[in-house]
Each structure stands twice: as structure tokens, then as C-alpha cells.
Image (cartoon, helix red, strand yellow):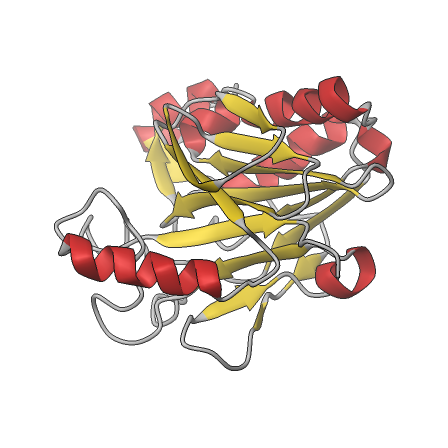
Length: 260
């Protein structure tokens, strides 16, 4: 079975020049909407700029990288992260202070300035949602379980419930993740998306294409997809699958900086 062809515009996140934190940004979001949307990068050889909190890395090294990451964006006084479990729980944040870590959460939303939403990824899709009219954002961690479990719909409903967003006002970007030609899965995954199982019981699946399809069904009309693949472009990103589970973690981030 061939991967589903992407029908959404392709964006290539661009490197942020300067500083000690290797990262890329979704082009245009900062300039057009005043929103910071990006993802960290490997930044050298293993372990590189690994931000995984639940790893064998020395705690002091990981926390030093997180401190560098947080200070790289001075417009944010707080950050939130979930101990992700590949499910569909999403949480709204009215405000933040320091660094908040929540158990069992795979998505975050806010309309508060100065609060940076983050998710860790190493193949899964970071989904960035922005309602520019109401100045609200949501960031989702979408592996195959979360995507098939409709975490995107949960994210849209989160924005609708808290700030009155309607789908046609939401801008969505499927960020740096594994691409459809690198992601071979079994019948369990195809069944989860309601897709026919390919001959032989395994085949290629494009998670970003599935999320884009769901977005269209929900009424989102502006959807873009990253040109990067964590497996193809492993020199720049971590890939759990391409490394056989040995790689570190990237952090995708989204938020509205403090004014002034």
C-alpha cells in the first residue's frame, strides 16, 4: 500500500540563527501573528540537544538543556509540559508560573500571554493550532494512538469551549515528524483509522495526511504540513524509530510572548 498523498501546502521550518539552542520555527507565524511556533533540533552528535526527561541521560545535563531552552525565548515567564501517554487528554491553562509538568496529558491550550506550551516528540506529530482572531493557541502530541483517538477534535473543542473558536478561523500546522514513506505499521494501526489492512498485514501510513483529513472533516480550511522528516533528516532531528529506540527527544513549542 502506498502512503496517502499529502494535499496540504508544505512548509519547511527554518533555523533560528544565533544562541546556544538549536531550533527551527514555523515560517511566518511570528511575523504575521505574533506567535512563537517551533521545535528544537538535534544540534550535534548524540546525545545532542536531547530534552527527554524520562531517559538515561544525566539529570543535571538534561535540566541544563531545559534551562537553556526556556531562556532562549525571553518573552515567556512560564512553560508547561505533560508526561505524555499517547492518549487524547488535553488541558486548558489560564495562566502559568515557572515550569508546570502534568501527568497523562498529551495536549495544551491557552489564551494567556507569556505561557509557552510544549510537547516532546521523536517521530510523533506536533500539531500547532492557532486562532488569530481570538489570540488563542493549542499544541497537541499526536502519535498514531492519539491521532486515531481524535486528539485533534479534542484540541478544536478545547479552543471552542474556552474562547469560542470556530473551525474555519483556526490555522493548523502538522510539524516535524516521521513521514509516510518511513512509517510502516501493522493492521492494528490501519484498523484504528478505519482503513483497509494492506496485503501482508503491514504497510506505509502518513500520520500527517490522516490529521489533515481529520482537519478537513472538522471544518479547518487552513492546514500546512512540515517538509521535514525525523527519520529522513535524522542528522538534524531525533527519531525513535530510525534509532531503534535509542534517540533522544525534541521539544515542540507554541505560545504568545508577553507584550512590551
